[in-house]
Image (cartoon, rainbow, N blue to C red):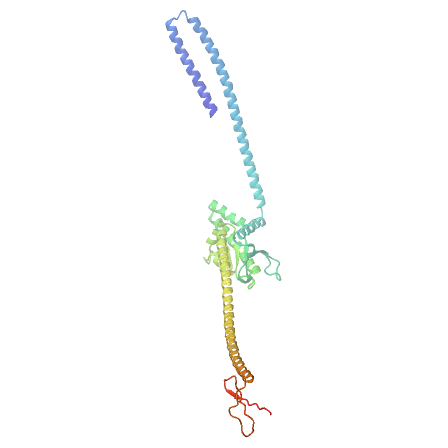
Length: 364
């Protein structure tokens, strides 16, 4: 576009210059047509040659610019074609990867693993678990741990060919083909639900139900809206009642796992609260024993105080006796019959405060 504008501008300038020169020439001829005729012819020839040279140079520049522009366009078209070819090859490779049912199953399992990894910790679920090792070697893709290590089996299912048949019938507006394709999809999930129920549900090791994961919301919406043509019962209700299987899409499984996660937190808080209650009961009983021991200690202290008081009384009585022995009293009432002066009998107090008379005899 820049080269084209440049070309148009150059042509316009050259045309304008020619018009101005012609006007100037006409005016000059009117003034002196005979004397200046030869000069004007010469100037006209020079102008013609200059115009020819300018036009030739401009033509070369235009051709050069147009060639460069077309070359750039060709290069861009070539790059675009290469990108389209690379995209087609990538699509072919992706289609070749997803050529079989097994590959689709691997992608569904990978999607389920990513979802569990984002929502739960590694200790809250197990991969590739044998639910019935004595009966079969089949393993469920994942099992979520619940309270008391009870496992909830989760297996994915993605019958892509049957789901594509539904989309193709819908695009073709073929009602009969659409009805048959939906029946085939429902039959595939009925068979899957029966196998999961028989192989992976085993109370009390597992829950009395299992989950089948539908990896796309479109597949889940198709299953959620399907009704049996005869019984008019929803497919999900049928599988839940007959096989105890719950169908879950990505969003539904997220909600279920988040509910489990909140349940884990609630159980953890409840367990912690129970532990605190038990500790408080233990502390209360220990305080009761402590107060009982304080009562016993108080009783012992009271007994010790009583013994100390009695010991003090005895000590005082012994002290009085020692004083009497050291300074005996005078004989005021001698015994005339014996001829020996009677001594005063010392008095002692027992633990109860009663005086005991103890006679001492002296031999003469």
